[in-house]
Image 1 (cartoon, one colour):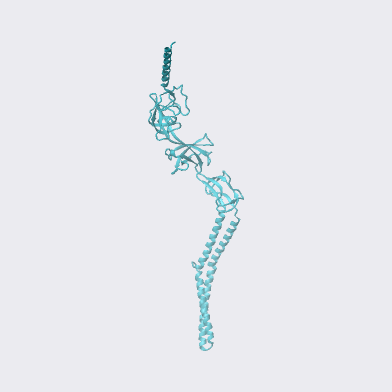
Image 2 (cartoon, rainbow, N blue to C red):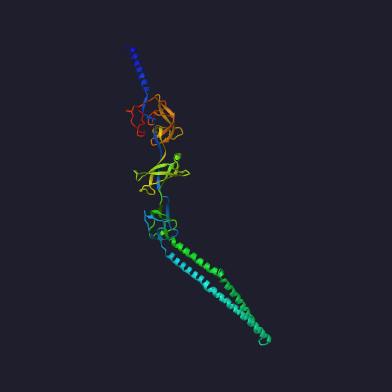
Length: 415
């Protein structure tokens, strides 16, 4: 074969190779797709929370003292007014007995003032009046006898001094009798002494009462932090109680989901300790402010019919149902790109090419989202797991070629 023929054959081989490469390069890449379909969707929001009682009550002592008796243990149900703890009270009881004796004395003195002192002062007034009358007659007689020369002038002077003394005694008796009349200073002083003794008794009773610690409300004992012989001090918690009443759930929701929740929203909860037993709850309160450190919003849920196994401080998972539609345009969440951005988009398979299409999202369910604009039912969309870019030539895999992804709902893979 001559050189010219060799060059011709080589050129033909190169041309064939270029043609084959061009043909292969122009073939569309196979990709998996999911279809936009119509169906039901429910939007839910999952959060973690804890079971809380209506109120947690920490029981302590107002005074320092030795614990004499603890009458309850963890788990006990207690009623309002039930004795929980007793402190040593010997000194307080002695002070109470002293105050009771002082009150009895004050009352007896008040009775004495009305039944003895006042009548005696009246009698003393009468006697002073009689003495004054006698002194006046004696002074008049002495002056007459002195004038007649029977007595020396000294006798008249003595009679005048006795008369002045009788007048002073009468005035003193009159003041004393007036002071002991009902409503006057003597009676008021006696009543004041009784009131002081009554106040002292009340103080002694209050001090004794502070040594007996009772339940402020119907509750259940959560923790017992003291034992007989221990020292109780103000500020130290002896017992912790959970007040009786409907249990609730306190949870925290990411602030970006605040627009999705509202009071009255239905929810389902499940305790970590009992994963197979769901129970109903309802959003009852949403905090008016965001926790800036955690970026969450505190939420409270009522539990209208709490199951018997619920206990305060249990960890629970809560699924709040934010919305539901029976006939919506839905798409696998795996096919939506930049779903949390202001401009989500998808790669739609249109005319044999991957085309970027902006979409508007509505409700978001488990694994699916609602498409409110941008796509139509039946359109094929390329999931993010596929290696395709806008403008690429692509073709949808046949059903037998496309493995079913775990994150795409049943029936939403294109065929």
